[in-house]
Image (tube, rainbow, N blue to C red; front, side, top):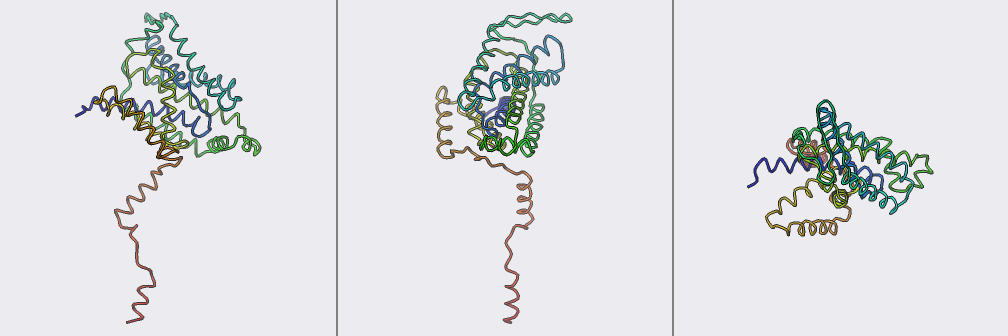
Length: 315
């Protein structure tokens, strides 16, 4: 049987991965722009948060905010250059930027001395000894806040504009929507989510290395978005939970677990081409009303009102 410590670790990893996937869902699922370099924003968030806590002694939550803002600024700069690109060109641009960020940190040698604190970035060796600040309770609160914020965003005017851009950018532009602003907002929000998640990742593992942010991780995040369902917050949550837990549940079969992992993804995509949720949402309010209706018997079908009248007339 799995111990609670082991299960808690899987849940924490699911929480910060869910944050990344939610941000990527805004960009890919709702706005229709595929990014294969999202691990680069996670890398920026991880290193910036580590520098804030270890070199400058800032509180953990402040470091996460700064990491998110720095990643968002990078996302805005990247968006300014690449958002006018269409289709595959935007994918290639994001892929190149993601790999460039990783290679920069892979070769970066930096020493910082502030207030008696000595901090060093040592290229590919990474940074060991990162404070273990990420807990399950904190991660859960952060994820719930960002799921709520994403739901409000998608139900707002800006969210509807993103959906219009995804369906037909030219038609959205002709109807008066500022498509560049909508895409820029999606890019910035996606980078913000990834930066905060990167800080949580670094302070959970206790170390950070550039090889943790290779292109394969970006592809994995995109698979989770598609697996759950494009344009579905519920799908992003379910897809992340399943694909984070599945490799651990299959660990007993050794190296074959990745084969079964890939097979499971292929089967789901064949059976459900639009993902688990297919762009639909699980409405919590409706679900609660349905449950209470079942328990109270209000959903029970009653006989027609005139049936009793006919019986009385017959008597």
